[in-house]
Length: 310
Ligand SMILES: C[S@@+](CC[C@H](N)C(=O)[O-])C[C@H]1O[C@@H](n2cnc3c(N)ncnc32)[C@H](O)[C@@H]1O
Image 1 (spheres, rainbow, N blue to C red):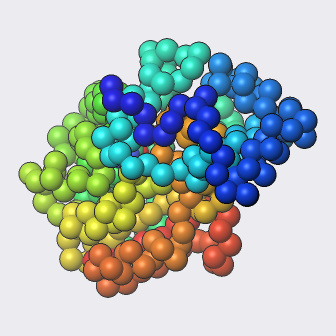
Image 2 (cartoon, rainbow, N blue to C red):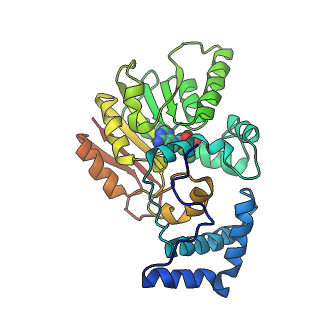
């Protein structure tokens, strides 16, 4: 494994500008002692139970501390290191071994009422968006950053033909179990659900054997990509003329702050995305129409649902 793309949590380069020095002084002051303490314990235990306020308190401390040393906002200069961090995600959670993490993801989204409620609402909205642009069962979909593959599996059960991709080898293994489960139910069309391992930025190179798709979608994953702009251009190339690229449930700009603690601890790429910038990039890639499904106003907080038609 190469070194992580951001410096380890305990690295302390020298403060530079006046605002960085001020941030450093605040981070080390008694005002943030609670957050400092929580962060220390959280570094030792990824699953340390934290209330919303405790997360906020630890997050503020961490952002100020890292801003003071030039580590915040995060930049990920090394693509290979960023890819490796994502690939090793299932083994990188302090306090949990890989087998336990895999076990949890096999049953996603059936974790508890709160998570199931959130994920099932998001899935329903995704299908509504598909239907609103004329997609229907039988169409060929390509998913980027599919995680453990639950969305792809549900869509395949509905009758869509899905090729699901992710950079994570453990996720593709879980995906293969989902394919077996589908076959056990009698859904044994070989093209109904396929999992392939690929970075989303270059998925067209890995899927050279596939016909262009009716839809390429990415749900809660573009903000993890090493290069989201390149991914939009790649998605365009994977589509048939008239096909849709759907960006679903991607976090807005505030996520850069909210998710910083988690991204830092797992060494993964967690940033918020800008609706304006994504729209501009879709047009640059060649999409002839772009559409915002929600939110109605660009508020920089609500999750983004957007699309582009080739
Ligand atoms: C938060 S998970 C979302 C997973 C899934 N879409 C879901 O809703 O359950 C982010 C996913 O993006 C994947 N990922 C991160 N960077 C990637 C990249 N450059 N190319 C492909 N997949 C990537 C991760 O492996 C993970 O599967």
